Image 1 (cartoon, rainbow, N blue to C red):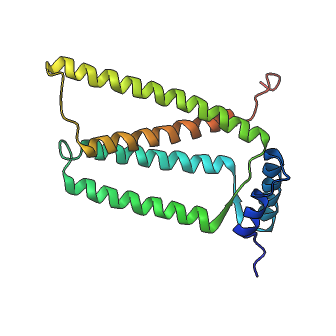
Image 2: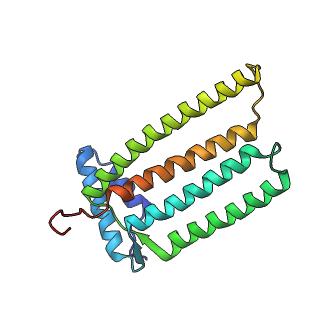
Image 3: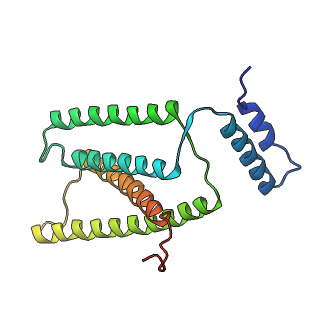
Length: 187
């Protein structure tokens, strides 16, 4: 039998009625820390995870741009080749992360910084969607045609681009917030 905790053990912790939500959360964190200590793989730091997320987000953004321009600017064959290359790269990243490294567990400060980065990224994404709406409105006004056709692959391209944008902004802000504090005395 392996030294890892099974899903049934975790389920038993979660369904205990005598524990409050906070106590269940603490118990699950304790179990995760025990699992982390037992795992012999080398850890990948939270900053390393954020850098890999930035790279994956950039790949998603590129994929979104290719899907958005497919058929009108870029030929269908090139976008298919690019999609296969993106899939292979994403698969390699997943295999590298899951099989070779263990994820470092976040401490309280890291959780706080990630929540702050998530909220900033949400504001940035809302701003980008507002900007895209203005651009679409302006294009419709300039062309004199207030209605135009948007195809499914263009919508999927925008969705992929927005998902990549959120991942890049969130991880970039986390990396920026997690930088070491600079003392004025040393300068």
